[in-house]
Amino acid sequence: MDSLTIMEKQLKAVSDANRLKLLACLKQGEVCVCDLVDVLQVSQPAVSQQLRKLKDAGIILERKKGTWKHYRLHEEQSPYIQAIIDELEPISYKHCGPTCSSQEGDD
Amino acid sequence: MDSLTIMEKQLKAVSDANRLKLLACLKQGEVCVCDLVDVLQVSQPAVSQQLRKLKDAGIILERKKGTWKHYRLHEEQSPYIQAIIDELEPISYKHCGPTCSSQEGDD
DNA sequence: CTTTTATATAATAATTTACTTATATAAGTA
DNA sequence: TACTTATATAAGTAAATTATTATATAAAAG
Image 1 (tube, helix red, strand yellow):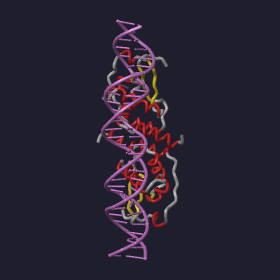
Image 2 (image 1 turned 120 degrees about the horizontal axis):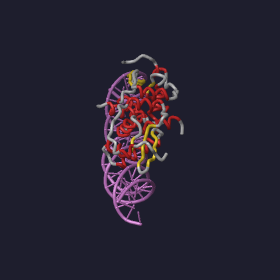
Image 3 (image 1 turned 60 degrees about the vertical axis):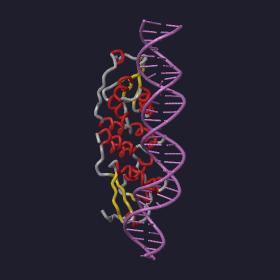
Image 4 (image 1 turned 90 degrees about the horizontal axis):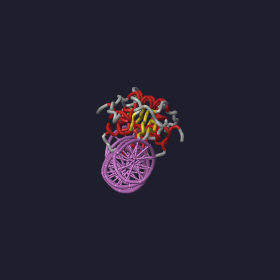
């Protein structure tokens, strides 16, 4: 994949209001899917699909923790993706529960 | 329009390979539509429509010169759009003619 | 004034996107 | 083992996108 195609893929991944909101949530650190469903006000599968796009573009990473899955921003971003993240106002959310938000994990 | 919506619009405008190529051409300065048609290898109306999207998003500016129309990058860009432009490898093109590429203009 | 040239707009069709509901998977719990 | 919970995948659908061809506009040339 040439650099322009990679760029296109990454930009397509962030050119959607809901996915920008997801990134705005993740600015604060790891978030589990259930909390993100709450923020976006769309169905759980919709959130799952959006997260997948961001993951496929290499913008976010996942960590499994029991039944839960936590997502976070990739530590290293292309400069232009980082600039986008920097521009986003953080969005805060309610933690769905103490079990979900604990720091231990499977990987 | 809130800032997230503006951001979404600008990012949608650049999340397409052909429009990224247009920006890559414009890095060198003003270009007339006929030269851009040559670069993209799609129909003239298609190029017109792509340019319109970039213009509507406030990323490029137009200047009329007789029958021709020249497009150039907006002097001021949002930091994230600028970061995208910076990342693009310039694309060179053939000037369609001396009349077209002269510097005088109507506005 | 008619013709040519450069560009824009309109109408349309194929493709992609982003939801939805239903179902699958996989881990935790009674 | 059966039930619940968290997430993912599948199938279907409505809306958006991006090309195409045909046509309009507007300036320049003859």
